[in-house]
Image 1 (cartoon, one colour):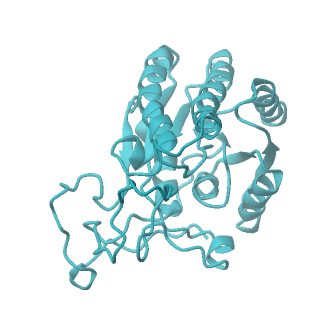
Image 2 (cartoon, one colour; image 1 turned 120 degrees about the horizontal axis):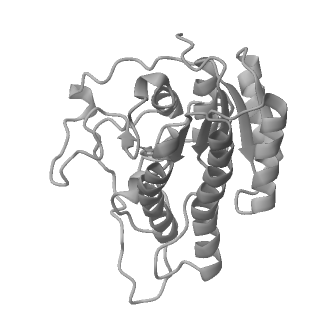
Length: 298
């Protein structure tokens, strides 16, 4: 695998076992040394352990992305250890939630703070370190299909992911004079491929009857259903929305010199899910040739 991120130092927030871990593994596979942050130290250490068993290097960081002192301390620890940060991936977020009729103010505020304030604080502190050292770095913020289109039961998640999309454009303009690029990546319900999750039989979000992100509603007599609950036909044109490995390959390339003029943009790897017109019904799985096999990272 081409080492186009060799000698780069990367920091990934929310390095839990699904998307965050997949991105960290890809950055490491392409040559970067990766600092893995999570509010749960066990998650951060598990991410580093995954890197190490595949022959790569990393460090675990415990910290709450909404507390500026902890963000600054994490950034300082990476700088003290490696001397610089070339790549930041803002991945920390709270998945799920409830709809507008049922979400609580407390849960809404926490979800928005983790994604909104966390993305801002890490971008601020890492970008300042890049500017001071004249590092023309790359910052990638992880958005979601819910930041671009709607689904019931995730009002806070949709709100803060929509905010991420415009934060990227604003930050890209602020940091362009320093040669720092800021982009977003939009995942769409990836199928877990971390062996730790596969062993636990964690199902794909889009699998089976009524699979979904987000909580249900109440049982008042005036309630109406917000989702179809029957068996769903395949709705992704290429038959799959991919895995964290697919996400990682794209994010790693986006952080490389090959993408040197890409800033303020959003990248989607979803098998055509977002491009599809709502009235279009893709062919059944048995009729699809499907994509090429995923390029493995482990």
